[in-house]
Length: 344
Image (cartoon, rainbow, N blue to C red; front, side, top):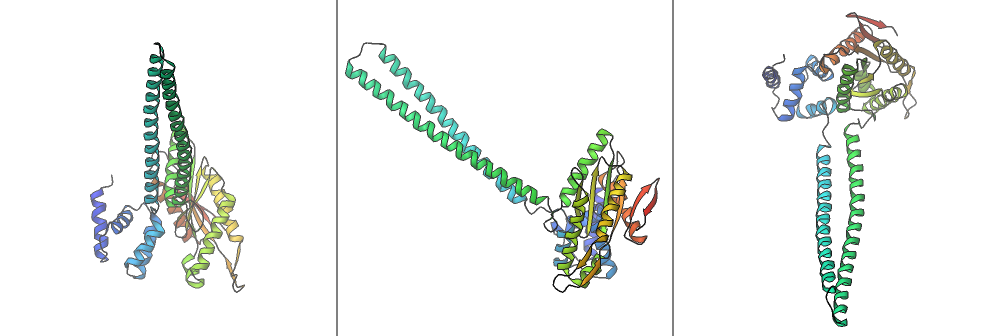
């Protein structure tokens, strides 16, 4: 069993050894690093350590943006929720007022009815009728106001619901590629694991990494690198259709979330994606320069009932790591605890 205290001590020790300020944001990053639940984060830190580079505040912020679960829209969602609550409170207050008005109107009718039961002069009857007309008109006015207010509230609530859904979608979407982001990935994998465990159906997770992406970025610039990420996302969307889901796992790493797909079919789909990406030639629009082809390596793992999400990710990541070290541009997967490969 993982000891949270030991993980906390490890995270603090890692920050101390690097002279990193122990802010809540930094602690979250290094605690995640200590758990090993985010392999792409750990690999990036290992690369930085191997290169002997220091981690200043700006560099740490880039790492958080790249690898950690985004929560930029949480405040906006809370604000929308507050507006919705205020709107509903206003409607409830209006309905309570309408209930009181209805009661008052009923009392007026009862008073007039009781007065008419006794003999009255024409002048007195006229006064009673004027009282009834006034009460009726007041009730009509209040009813009309309530109807208008309810229409306004309905439109406001509908707009708030739309805004909240847009914010929710944005919070779950990678802004560069348009693919589901890391938060979406976490939720989708957890849901797929739960379904597979309950229904006894297969679930395959595939992790992919663009080969030599850092070198490509350093050579041609980040803008061109962004175009590569968009190209990979486009190829994944072409092959992976709902209810299956592609996702940007972090940085140059992507994932295929494949519920109800066994390992054989999952490996085949990953290799189709790999071949499509490999077939694309990159040309720099500004100069017409041919930048060659982009390749990707993939690792696939079949969910085993009872295992944790971090264990499943680690197994898929181990297969990806093996594909990288076997020459890249291939898919590797687990078969009877041995790794096999589809050669490029």
